[in-house]
Image (cartoon, rainbow, N blue to C red; front, side, top):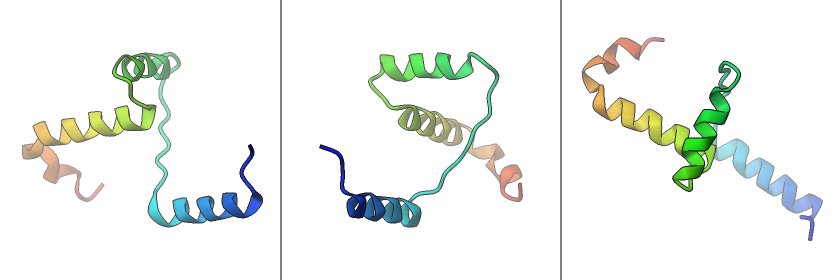
Length: 70
């Protein structure tokens, strides 16, 4: 059953207040590779990319200061 218009407005408002969007532009084919890795692990693309970034940051803390002002 489709969500009511009021419910969709509520969800949109909640998402605007609680989440930020990040748009990535990658070369053709990269998205499919990433999606394959995510699918193999039972993850959404958002969960996969988030985990990859968090893992990178946790293993590269000594260089993180150089990115603070970018």
